[in-house]
Length: 142
Image (cartoon, helix red, strand yellow):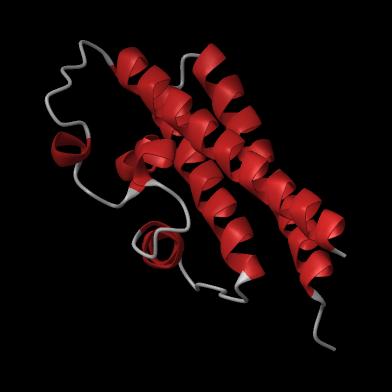
């Protein structure tokens, strides 16, 4: 059975929670000094968040990198979401750290992990805000 539009948006919020769970794990790893694991969990948080918003368009990518690419295609290149609003997303596009961090010099793994965590948090908050605004708009128009 196909879900109606409002159900899709509500389900997207539920799916977003997986991203929030991953960022919580990233924070725990960071506090324990396990910066590599913190970065990995932060990346997964972004992938889950991208998947949550793709769910609305009934796009279900098979891999994390597909989720990021599909998000870029369907939300950024299409102009639905302004690139400036999700600038940290670019950190997660599967580029090498040198390219994705353009000119940023990290003096330690801790500094890099903190940067990645902040970018992931920003992305998750933006996706959540976008989904909630869309749900509210749809409710008001019904």
